[in-house]
Length: 582
View 1 (tube, one colour):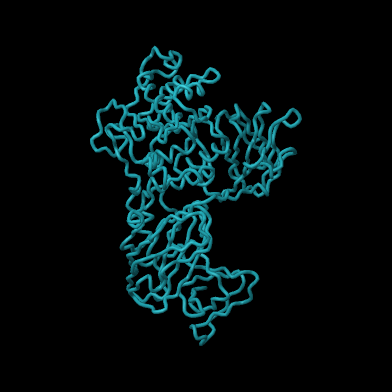
View 2 (view 1 turned 180 degrees about the vertical axis):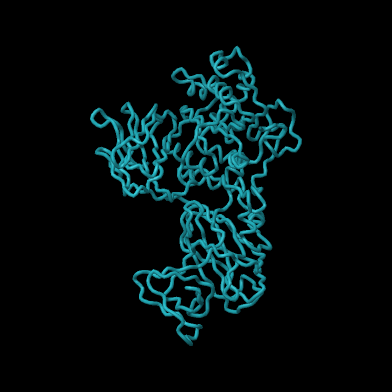
C-alpha cells in the first residue's frame, strides 16, 4: 500500500497545463483534457430552465433553452452556480445533470493540494467503486465546490462527473471533511484518470489527478459495422470472435463491404483464424472507380487497412478455402488509435527479443520487460513458442498492444503439452520434421537482437516447455555464431552474436529490475502498471494465474545474466547496461 501511495502522491500541484502537458510528454502518459469543466447541455426534452441571480431566487437573470450549454462553477444548496452567455447565475440542480467536457478555458494556479489516493487498482468484481482520498487543500480564496471526474483513457471520454458542495466553505480544507470516499457507479474496465477540481469565487482550478485502473473484461471499441453492408454469405453478426465469420468459395471468392456514404469510415481491421498467405484489398469510390489495390503478405493474425475519405466500398479477396476471416470491423475517424490494433512487421534489427513459452508468460514471469523497453523506443520482438489455441492468440495480441508493443509477435505454433521430462518435450516440438533448435538459431540470425530474455532454466513452476525454451536459447547462442551450423540460414542472414542473454531467476550474475519506477516524474504510470493492465487481457487465465500471486512467488523482477559478450553488469538494474543502442 505504501508503494501505491507513493506512486499516486502528487504534492503541490498548481496547474495541470504546466505539469502534465509539458512539451515532450510521453505517449504513455495520460491524455485526459488539459482543462475539464462541469458543463451541461440542456436536453431537448427539457423546458426552459430559469436562472436566478442567487440561490434565494432574488431575481431572474436569464433562461436556458433546450440545446443551450452552461458551465457549472459552484454549488449552493439546491442550486448550481453556472456561467452561460457571459453571465453568471443559479439554476436548480434537479433540472441539470453535470457532465465533464473538455474546455479550453485557462485555469488559475490558485489552489494547491497534498492529496493521496489510497488505492488505484480495483477488482472487476467490485459492484461499486469507492475511492478513498486523504489529505488537505490550500487555496487563495474560499473553496465552495469540488468536482470529481473520471476519464477513460482507452475510449477517450468522460465516464463520470460528481459535484460535491463544501458545507463549510474555507480556504483550507481537509478533504475528509468534504468526502471521505468518492462513490462512483459501476465502472467499465480499463485505465482511467481521476481529476479533482475546486471552485473558489466562481473560478475553477485543478488540484489533483491520479491514475485509476479497473480490472475486468474490456468492451470492444464501438465500430460502425451497423452502418455498413456486407456481401451475401458474410453476415456481419457472424463477423466476430465468437463465430466463424467468412471464407471464400468458388461462387463467392471475395467479400465486399459497402461503407457509409458520408465518408466517415477511416480504418478496417481484419482478424484471421489463421494468417492468410496473401490477400488483396481493392478500395473503390462512390462511382465504382478503383482508388487503390494491393496484395498483402503480412502473415499477421490481425491486419488493418487505412481508408481514404472518398472510399465507399472495400473488396477483400484471397485464394484458398482455409482463409477464414474471424472478425472484421470498420471504424470512423473518431476511434482511439490506442484501442484499435494496427500492427507493424517485426523490425529488421532488434534491440530486444523475448522468448515466451506460452501466451501470458511474457507478462506473468517477465514483469514490466515489454513496457520498459517499448517506452524507451527500443525495437522489441516477442516470440511465442507454443500454440495455446486461437483465443489465447487474441488475448496475446490484446495484451501486447496494451503493453505498448506495435510490432506483430512471432508465433512458432508448436504443440502445448504437459510432459514429464525434457526429452519428451523435445519430441513433441520435433513433430513433422521441425527442428526447434534450428528455428531459434534462425530467429537470432534473422533479427540480430542485442539482448535476449527467456524463462527459467528450471521452468519456473517446473513446466518442461519453459525449461526447453530456456535450454534452446542457451544452446542457440554459440550455434548462431557458428557458420557451419545450419549453413542455409548462415548464408541467408549471416552469423550473429547476441550481446547479452538474461534468463528469469537464473541464480548467477543476478540483476533486479525496478518495475515500479514511473516512466517520468510527471506520470505515475510504470512498467508494472502497464503489465498488469496488459495481463488483464488474458481473461482465460485469470482463475488459475495472477500477477499478484505467481508473479510475486516467481519474482518477475529477478533475472540472471546467463551470457555476456560485453562484460559483467555493474549497476545490475538494466538489461542494456554496456550496450550502445543506436
